[in-house]
Amino acid sequence: MLNLDRLAINQVTTKAWKLPEAIAGYAQAGVRGIGIWPEAVESCGLANTRKLLNSHDMVVSSYCCGSMFVARGAAERADQRDRNRALVEQAAEIGAHCLVCVSGGLPPGHPDLHAARQCTREGLDELLPYARAAGVTIGIEPIHPMRVAEVSSLTTLREANALCDALGAGLGIVVDVYHVWWDPDLEGQLERAKGRIVGFHLCDWLQPLEQNLFGRGMMGDGVIDIAGIRAIAERGGYTGFYEVELVSRLWQERDPIQVVRTCIERYRSQC
Amino acid sequence: MLNLDRLAINQVTTKAWKLPEAIAGYAQAGVRGIGIWPEAVESCGLANTRKLLNSHDMVVSSYCCGSMFVARGAAERADQRDRNRALVEQAAEIGAHCLVCVSGGLPPGHPDLHAARQCTREGLDELLPYARAAGVTIGIEPIHPMRVAEVSSLTTLREANALCDALGAGLGIVVDVYHVWWDPDLEGQLERAKGRIVGFHLCDWLQPLEQNLFGRGMMGDGVIDIAGIRAIAERGGYTGFYEVELVSRLWQERDPIQVVRTCIERYRSQC
Image 1 (cartoon, rainbow over the protein chains, first blue to last red):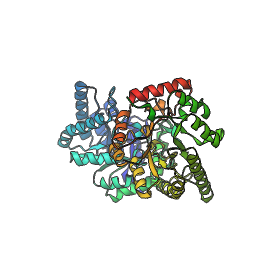
Image 2: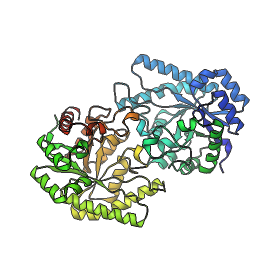
Image 3: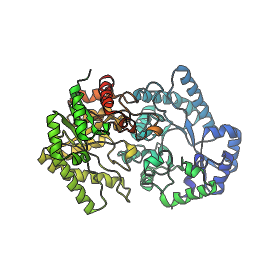
């Protein structure tokens, strides 16, 4: 049975709870990690967030997410750089295991995938020295290819590994089973990612797609071989948190206490 | 400007037309190739289909599609084998440039992606000698990873190339820009596919996904760099048809004559 010490829950999973309630609610259920969004920190206050985390002995498994790296021009690009630097500082302040960065989709009005990928690489290259100095690890997260136009030109672990190879220390990979489970190269790229996995997100892929496009499933309710994917990461030496990140209106509308309980049960039985 | 001789239209694009009307309608507009579905041949009759094709000097760019290779047991598997063999015979009879085969998703009740991939490989391996003897090329088509659970465990050109390497003569690849445009390895795998591309499907990817999950776009209405992808295939020596396969309720509801006209215009201006 999996050790509860390594379970984290992303606050999006219990959206009815504000951040203070989520920190307290997870802690009370015995969960030790939490994934936090900047909007919540902004509303709760940075110092207050840190105080709440400390008082509940709660660790931030991920701070998500860094601004997109696709910009319409120099001014927008400068804004994004500033925002990402501010997020690095916040991540350092709350002791986040990583600042998750999602690359962004196609530049508005210029659907050029090559350009989008180049922007991501340059944006990360620019942010990394700043993050290293702050002691914050940047976690790049490959997102499912169905979201390439709107959310992320970075879609595969192979690309994430190549970026880590190219950009060096301070950069890691966040694996989300929902985004990578389909990949025929999954095992090889997870092995290649040995030592670089800085986050591991859990949920499930429901069928049929038509009815579940933006509702992810609780672990065990879908078709992903979560335990199999997790085992590869473990063999590669992953010792970090497993963070349930359940973006699902269905689950968000339920009683958060019940949702947390189900997360724990399914983490133990299905992962 | 692209040569109209290489334009084909898949009959799904003008669903209001039955097969005889589609053959006549495309021919009248100067289109020389047609993609045909087995259901249409069944309803039109095989001999009659061949006669209509001949009398309009129309070529079948693709016969789509071969049965899924995922089965629930030995009996279902035997049924699929028989159906695929019948499709090979029909493809030979109508002189189809290839029989498109889509691998199928996850086995019902057993969401095992490795097993699904193994089934595809075995199914193709079994079908190929039969297809070779009939002089029919099998075209495997990688399908977008968002459809892996329901439609196709085969998602990337890399996998398709590996299958061609492994299974040998008689097997080719059908490239559909809608399914592969996101792939970071697109250029390399298209180059690797040199000499094996046996079909090339055109349409476009519309944004946002939420509103366009099952409505593909007319070339030029979306974000795919169709001309760029086509150019790579051309450099690799592709000389076959470009087949517009527009699965879209919006376009299917329009006047087929107008749709064909738009296909021709967009083929010339956007591809």
